[in-house]
Structure formats: structure tokens, C-alpha cells
Image (cartoon, rainbow, N blue to C red):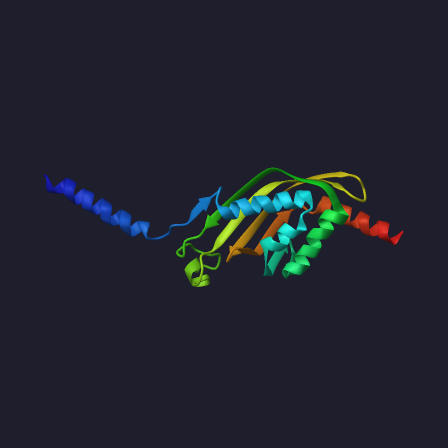
Length: 183
């Protein structure tokens, strides 16, 4: 009878250690990377493009819905256009930011582990979402739309960014700006 509890304890310790080895990804909200992402959004609100220049790595890859941009300079040009030509009074309402530090054993979309996909470094993605609010510089119309942006960090710099939002209001302001240039 005394052997049964010992057996159960031993089995519990062994099985928990076997299953515990599988994956140890974790999520943070107050870490250095999450705080830098928060500061990035603040810098956009204040028109501080210099912060963005230091925030992104040279080989930056950006995907905004179905638009792809390659290189930090190309994205910074778009960002500067956004803050100086398209919109003013930019704010990010209800901003949420958290950073995922993926285990080398976590699965990627193609079924490989992150350790197989990126064997020399940990994969770190920061997720953010908020409501973009601003005023169109050409139309004077207030815009407001939800967005989700993910940032992959490598060696202290953001090297990949994925942004998703309904572009209807953005595109309307861009079209109005282009039409005003033609007149």
C-alpha cells in the first residue's frame, strides 16, 4: 500500500518533466522591447521620425495588408509622408502591446520549430493593436480605424513588420491629396 503513493509521485515527476521540455515560450508586457514599441507609437504621434530611424534595422521588411516594402529608407519615407502629408493630430487610442519570446520548440506556420527555422537566435515578435485616430491634412476629415501591427526584433532592432487594417479611410485621404496636387 505504501508503494502506490510513491509510485504516483514518481510517475507525476517523470511525466511532468517529460512534457515540460516541449515548449517554454513566454509573453511580456513591461519588457524593454514592449516599451520600445510603445515609444515608437508615441514618436509617430509627435512626428519624431528620428526615433523610428533608430528603432528599425537596415534590412527591414514591411507588409502593410498586401503592400510590401523592403528596406528601412523606403518605410521611413512612407512614415514621413503619413505624418507630414496625409494626417495630423495622430493618436493611438487603447494601445495594447505585448512581446512573445518563442521557444526553439514552438511550431512555425510551415510545421518546423523556431529552432529549425532560426537556429542562431530566439524568435521575438511583439503584437500591438489600437485605434488609429487623426485628421486628414487635405480633407480635414477625422479618421478612426482599428489596426494590428506585429514587429519582429532581432539584435535589438525591428527587422520585420506586419500591419493589418481596413485601408478605406487611409486610401480616401491619399486619393484626395493626389487629386489636390493635380489641380
